Length: 204
Image (tube, helix red, strand yellow):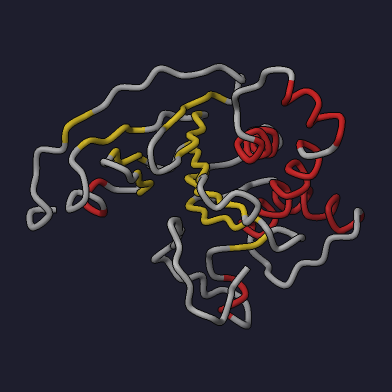
């Protein structure tokens, strides 16, 4: 997913927390790619059943260079993304689902997860879309003009926008530059409230 030649981009994810357990450290740091290298994930939290999920994925032929639970989550999302994009699922999508395939994959993967997470996910197949979800780890959306943001704290985005949506547990957001859609893991569209940040960037 990484191109050594500089190029223009309209989307990106990052994580300021450096994972230091297990050598080498760079293989354990966010973001993590799925088995295909198309999907990238950043994650705050702890996936408690990652060892059982990892054993299943290894049995299916997945290889892991990292020892982290986030790496397992990225591979799991990738597995579900392949299912969503299969011919059978593609037919179902054409028949009326308005939930993006990447969001469907994230939702399916999270239904298998035990633990806490605040995640942001992007896919090389559609670099205009980001998917975010939370359970037990803070996550908010920043709503701008021709741009939208995901962050764990309002101070990270207050210099760009003062309008935020605080995601609730089990909610999954799909963002583009111009739109935001929030679903629940129960496959329902969620209503969300836009809040106004009252402090300045210097105060955050």
